[in-house]
Structures are given as C-alpha cells and as structure tokens.
Length: 551
Ligand code: OOB
Image 1 (cartoon, rainbow, N blue to C red):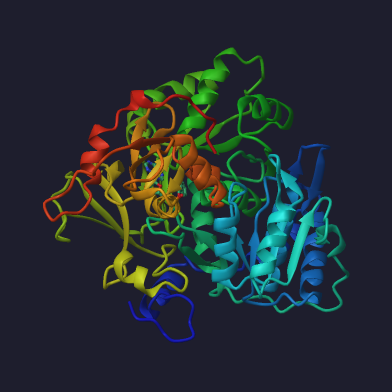
Image 2 (cartoon, rainbow, N blue to C red):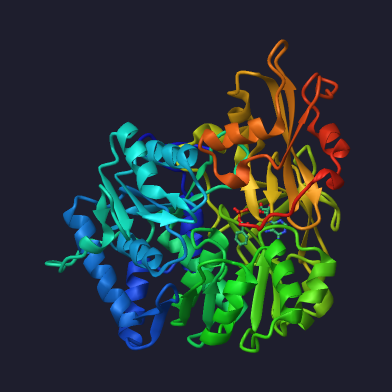
C-alpha cells in the first residue's frame, strides 16, 4: 500500500474512484447537505425523538437549524475542517446534533463508545490529536467530567470539553450554539466524514476513515435493501456510535429516507418494549444476545409490538435455532446482517426464502463489492468451500488512519481488505460466516483484541505471562478467559485481583476478562509460540459462572 506523505490514510486509486462515480455510487453529496435537503423537502416531519427523561422531539427543520447554530458555535470556538473531536455520548438526541454539526464544518467525529474509559479515551485523544471531547456529565454511574479533566491534563491538543448536562469545570454544550453569521465552508464529498473504531486485533484500536461519498452510498444501498422510507420509525437500541445501528440502515439510514429516529436509552426489553409500543417503532437492529432476550421477553410481555416490521440481527453469529424463533415470537420479519466498520455489509433480502434468512448472513450491498474467498496461501478456494474472506469495493476502506504498518498486513497489494472472517458461499451467492481466523474475541457483538487485554494484565507486577482466548458461551456467543502464569516467587494471585487491575488500568468493562485461570505454562505450537488453539480447545463453557447483560 503506498502512503503519500502528509496524507492521513490511503484512498481509492483514481481508476476505482472514477468507476464508482460513473456507476452512480458516489454522487458528490455530503451529510450536511443531506440534512439540509431533507429539511427543505419535509420541514415539519419528526426527524428525531429522545424519549427520556422527558420526551423531546425535533422536526427536520428544527434539527437542521439547531445543527447550523451548533456548527457556528463550534467554528467560533476554533474547531475547523479536518479537526478531530472525540465524541462519547449515550443514545440521546444531542448525539445526532453534534455529529451533524461536526459534519457541517468538516470536523471529524471520532466515535468512542459510552463504555470506554481512560485507556481508550486517552489513546483516541492523543493519537488523533483531538481538539475537543464531547461527553455527558454522568452516565451509567460514571462521572465523565473527571475523566475528561484527567485526559485534558495530559493531552496538549485537547483544548475543549463540552458536556451535556452539568458541566462541572468544562463548557456546557448548551452554551455553544450561536447564530451563523455566514455560511460555513463545508467539506468536499470525497473528504473524510469521521473516524470509526475497528474491532481490532492489535494492542490499540485502529481508526477507520470513512468519506461522505462512500458512507452515503452504503446508507442509500442499505435503505433500499431494508425498505426504509419516510414512514420508517427506527429505534436506536445499540450504542449509536456503532457502525451497525448508525448505517445498517441505522439512524443515518432513517434520516436519509426522511423517517423518524427514536433513541433508546437502554437495550433491555423492559426499556425498549414500552418505547416500541408508544412510538410505533417499525425497525431496529440487535446483536444476537439481545435478539435472544427480546425473543424470550416477547412471549410473556404484555406490550403491543405489532408495529415492528423488520428486525435486523448481526454483529456476531446468530444461531440458526435462535433465528427460527424470532419471527413467531416478535411478529416481525428477520434480516441477518454481516458487516464491518471497515466497509462491506451483507444483508439477507426481504424476498429471500425463510431457509436462506435463517441459515445465511446475506449478500453484499453493492454489485461492485468484490468478494474473494481464499486459502492460507491466498489462492481462491473452490466454490462452496470455506476460506478467508477478502473484499474490495466502493465503501470498503483502502487503509486505516495513520497506520501504514497495519495496512501492510490488513490489505493485499491490490487493495483487498483481509476481513479475518472464515466464510463460504452457498449457490445463491449468500455468504455463511463459519468462524474467524483473526485473533479477536466477539463478546456478544463487542469486539475485543486479546493483545490489548494481555498488555494490561502483563503490567501487573506478579504476572509472568498471559494469554487471552475466547470461550464459547450460550448467551453471549463468546466470553474472555485469561490464562495467567504467575511470576516465580510472587505472592499468590487471585482472579478478582487481575480483573480489578485491568479495570483500574482504565480499560472498558467489557474487556475485563470474564474468567482468569492460573497455569504453570502455556501449550506451545511447533515453532514454540503460545498455542491459542490448544488453549481454546481446553476452555469449557461450563466454567462460566454468571450471565451479564450485553453491550
Ligand atoms: C459489525 O462491525 P464491527 O466492525 O464491529 O465487526 C466486524 C466483525 C466482522 O468482521 C465479523 O467478524 C463480525 O464482526 N460479524 C459477524 C456478523 N456481523 C459481524 N460475524 C458473524 N455473523 C455476523 N452476522 O459488527 C457490523 C457492522 C455493520 C453491520 C453489522 C455489524
């Protein structure tokens, strides 16, 4: 992959960009322009609803005007085109306002998750040289203002912290908006719109640069496949910053079609079902553990879920048995989605037969999504055989943000992204995800890079070595198990001490190992490396004590 000095990420070679434009995939639109157009076309339709604690609504005109005022306020405080702004908000209306305000001035949101803590946020702010950080005051019992102060003290670029709610020593987001005195120069459609997080396989998360052109294409395509229209009422159940609820078809898809987005503060049925009933929700997306919870809860819930028309399930493998139970329990249609923040998204189709919907993970969005399924040597496997999925196309990145050494490993010479997924293609062309070759744990849709957790555990003075692997789990699909070799002569260690240590290192709670086992040595491969394969095969699901709530 060639890197041009001064350029933050590799982009599509001109011949591909020309082809994607000629095919009408890239239309020269921006997200700021999209909202402006929708507001002009149907100003009085409801764009956004935040139901808690008091129900707030935004018409398209109101959203557009508030975004303009917020954009002007950000610009007046010195935030400009290309600047990075780390955004860590829960599912609230301000999430949408801030994202569109940043889009309008061409600043790049960096999408942190509400669960991220000092380790992740500190890294995002430092690595992206962020100029601003947007937070809630408190969320899920955590005071984000204190964390922001700590990070600001060690990150010289981070001049501004905006808080939704009580600002403490920072700036209230509510004070930012101002009247726009002149139109702001927006970004070009081929420029970056935001940085998304990669699930990752490495010590620190990689950042995924997406452009207005490419992301809007994936959203248009998703809307068409999922049948999103101005009548769609989309419930944002998963964290709004995830690629799946953002664009598959997600809240951006709903806004693109002129529909209504409803923010769901928590994903459990007790919170979501009353909202589905009250707001007449037609569509949402869930990870498999939540789909299981919803399926079970629907059987006994007294709530009227009859407005639900389509439920998308993806982010991790959805078992066929669970998929078969969803439609009768929830009284809506199921669509499986297999996607990645790096680009490629596959959906089963509304006109697929039931067997295809419950047994496959769908077809790519675009006729120009190139799919290769290869063996370990990089040669194409015969039709129907398992292999590594490689992909290239009009909305799949050609490289990460400022990470040329990763790009050399994650992309082929000719620009295919190595997804790390093992798939096979059935005769209809649909892909079936069989497993994973990458060293990653998929904990109910949340991706964990073992290396990141291992680095945290290794910092413990009594730890000699550690290896983190996935253990199968009936509910979450997978959970994490840390095999630890204690340092010779160190005081005896307890599992709880390792877990607390990881948490105190500032890692998000979902990365704290579910299980810790102390061992004298690791199994080795022929060349003397730790054999994670052998470790995985000895880890048993029954050793898991409790079942936590996902995401
Ligand atoms: C979505 O995006 P990411 O970036 O959090 O994770 C991507 C990875 C894939 O490479 C694959 O390993 C896994 O998540 N995955 C699935 C899956 N959907 C994603 N594995 C099995 N079955 C599925 N249906 O997770 C994401 C992005 C957009 C839409 C949906 C999911």
